[in-house]
Amino acid sequence: MPMQLRKDAKYAMLVATSMGVRLTPADGQPFYCSDTFKMQVTSAETNVASISSYLGLPVKVLTAFVKGSPVARMIKDNLASRHMDYEGPEIEQGGPWGYRHQFNLADSGTGSRGPRVQNDRAGEVGRLLSAKYFDLDRIFGQEGVQIVHLSGLIAAMSPETSKFCLEIARTARKYGSLISFDLNYRASFWVGREAELSATFAEIASLADILIGNEEDFQLSLGIKGPEAGGKALSDKIDSFKEMVNRVKAAYPNAAAFATTLRQVVHANKHLWGAIANVDGEWQVVEPREIAVLDRIGGGDGFVGGFLYAVLKGWEPEKWIQFGWATGALATTFLTDYAQPADEEQVWSIWSGNARVRR
Image (cartoon, rainbow, N blue to C red; front, side, top):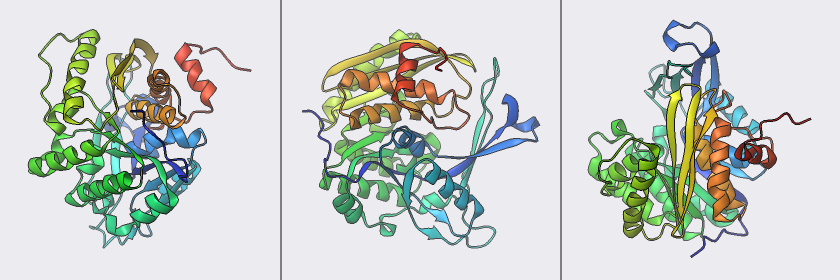
């Protein structure tokens, strides 16, 4: 059955997220031997939403802020510059050892030297996200949302955020919003909470209309049996993902669309980039193509953002994966973790392989 978008919604997309900042050395240098850094606002979920917001669709962000923090002010100004509405509690810092926004320490890599990333999440204010801070009936019932995008990163951050994502998914379903769930399994988040998080992820997945992840995500987050071990060629991954999705579809029949990306790293600045999707039982495959990479972080989020934008525009499913592939490729050409598309034409030019100058 085709997914139906709510027609009276104020927001095309809503994301729940924990905002932070990324420190990146200049000129592609390693972090440990640099003394000059660019600081930018980032989160996986707003990376996704940026495709829609830059292309003119209304987006809302639910998050939390440290009261009086200059980093919080930077985050708010950045979200506003991305044309996003935001809502969330102001949490007292609680002294020098209290709460803060996370720091992502990441270089871009260059050539034969790959990027290195370390997340410093101690005291992260986003771990306090809870439904008690938001009027979800107002947001989903009165304002209205067409697609809510949830991530396993937020669903697994803390017991509070797990309950928060569950409440969002339940409320979204109640008011007719579509639910997109990117499983984003992170082993370190699951330590000591395996049974609890398995139940949480299973319920969100049972409510979702769109499920996104790779073989590891589906196996470790949802307990779906993986494919038999095979070769390492990208063509093998296409076949193995199809096997996996057929089992996921049987376990979670509410979902109508499944998607993942394919990436083979030639070197830090040249990747083979592809994607696979299944929509209403029909397969869509983008065979891996070479792309130039300035900074790879956010490419996967860019794919999801473009895929969901195409859903929101009501395009045929064949275009969902094409536009997502292109916005993922676009994201790797930016030093920000999120793509900032100028217009749809720019994205379709990437899909068609047209990098000629436009005058």
